Length: 84
Image (tube, rainbow, N blue to C red; front, side, top):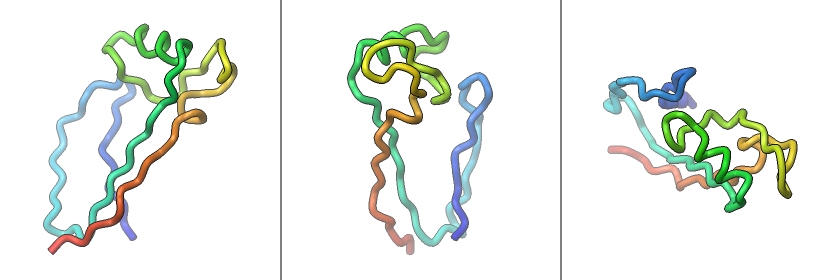
């Protein structure tokens, strides 16, 4: 199964991209959700472009201290849908 992923720039700026779905047979969405915690909110508020992060940011205090945002996120998946 071939996976398409939206490109990510090193500085979290959007990369203009066109994805041709004509050859795609199915589609599924993934969404990472962060827990509500003051230490995580502080990381997000200090980002230069708003709430854009790459997930490697390390949490320095609170119950998630020492972990990265990727480690504490919960990933939600949609069901795979066939495309006609």
